[in-house]
Amino acid sequence: MPALTALRAVAALLVFLYHFPPSGLGPLVDVVVSQGHVGVTVFFVLSGFLITVRYYPQFARGDRGLADYFVRRMARILPLYYVVLTLTHFLSAGAVPVDAPRWPEWTLTQALFGSSVEEITIPTSWSLTVEECFYASAPLIFLGAAALRRRLGATAGTLLALGLATASFYYAGSLIVHMASSAGLARLPFLSDEPLLRSYTVFGRFPDFAVGCAAGLLFLSGRVEEAWRRRGGAFLSTLLAAAGAAALVAAQAGIAGAVGDPAAEWRWNLLVAVSSGAVVLALTCPGAPLSRLLSFGLPVYLGRISYALYLIQLTPLGNGLLYRVLPGREGVHLVSLYIGMSLVAALLYELVEEPARETILALWRKRSLLGLAQARTRAARASSLAILLGALAAQHAAWALGALAPVDVTRVERVLGDGSPDVVRATVTLPAPDGREPRVRLPAAWRLGPSGDRRAPRSLLVFVDGKPVPFQGARPPAGPEAVAYYRRPRAEYLSLQIEEGAQVTVVNRAPLVALVLAGSGVMEAPLMILGPFLLLAVAAVAVYRHRQASIWAPRFSLAFATALAAAWLISGVHLEPWAPLVLAVEGAVLAALAVIRRPASTREPPVAVAE
Image 1 (cartoon, helix red, strand yellow):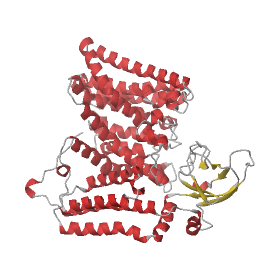
Image 2 (cartoon, rainbow, N blue to C red; image 1 turned 135 degrees about the horizontal axis):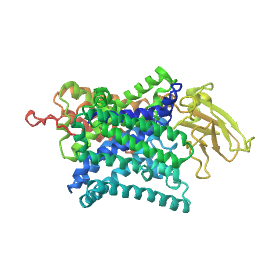
Image 3 (cartoon, helix red, strand yellow; image 1 turned 60 degrees about the vertical axis):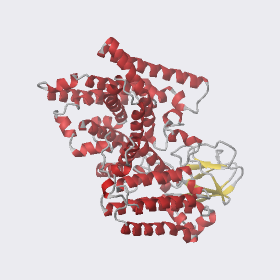
Image 4 (cartoon, rainbow, N blue to C red; image 1 turned 90 degrees about the vertical axis):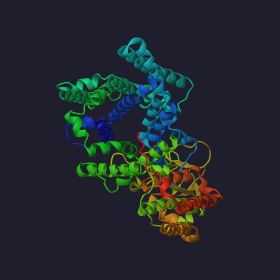
């Protein structure tokens, strides 16, 4: 159903316009844009529909496919999420933290055990926790629905099963809020605050999936397709889509009018879910004009890359990458911003999401990866080997930078100079004149983001009397140690926890500044950086001499290389003294790939892996 894939693009566009709203386009457009967050509800309804259509018959028959179901879900969501999370950390702070405060993000439970939406590294990823909870509960719901449908009939069984599931999640949420509040667990706001629980967890969002499941079961009954085949079916589909879209906009207006009343907003969101279900069912009619329009190549492809676009919007890979080039949010600037983010999302889809998914499914099915995606031409083999050895070079560079002497005040002064706009020096006295904690005002040029949403820089180097002090971002101090932090993500001041007055130096460690500082360290130890160039030279010779090297296609090689580099950084191996030994082993394996030839008679044809 290509039109449903394109519907994902529409939902992602709604979320995009919510994050980067244009103005002055009329009251109707203002309502749609200001409440564009309902695109997430459309995603949830569509997810419930597709999961039901794909897996309900299998579970209803009693087929054993639970492990395959979870592997498919994992292959669809996790690889791209972890790559974007790793790159976001690395581009923001030059490091990939795996400490306790970040564990919810690494386990995809941030919308249950996280501290707040603003503190999530990928702000939109809270919805992945909700999806994950639905995926975990869907098989049990399908089994219960199948049993009730056999006993009570299709309609009564479906309504009872989904009604019981919805009520169970709703009252379980109320119980969790009561218990968390009684236990004083304010540090878990998603579970102790009723509005947050209803808006950002499965305990409030399950009705969205339930509507999608109901629409999926109705579609599986055959009645919907039968209605579309009748005379006037295309007109009926168009009428249903128009009614659903109108009801959705009316629900958006209701949410806009209920701002400040979480219960009313939640009730209006139920209408958004029902409206989305009607649109989803309408788009299953292949002959309807709207379905045909959405089935063209561009809308369908935008739907395929919508997951990547949704993830990167508020990260350094999206807005953070483009806001300096496209500072405006009107007209051509907004269109260019959407196109730019879509291009980044397309690269992530082609080079990370799809190769990783197909590789995981091939491994699960015990199929040869070389048969799945073997490079067929000499140029492809050369590119693939260069990509893999480029990953090894990146690992070497990470180890070399980690082994260099840490940045100190002396290097900052020598490299950046006294008049650098990326360095602030201030004298802090205790007690502070205004009675607040010691703090340093940050230059306005350091703040990131569009006007109206300017945020403090993500990464700083802080020195107190020439000694480095840990920078914690928007996390308050947890102990008596000297730290630097923000009181909130949009802070204009850097707050300090120190015991006495001092001379403070603050460096804005933006990507270019970090590169300059790291480069100065490399120049002091040039031999450490020669390894990657030697590896690439060996790769070029190996590819030239062995034209039949057994190697993956470039897209799969890039996916594997990305995973390898991410694992290297996340695990912290590059900081260990035995890191060069690991590099040597990896180099030996890649060299073997370059020189081993496969006999022509045993080469496997490519295998297509379907979702």
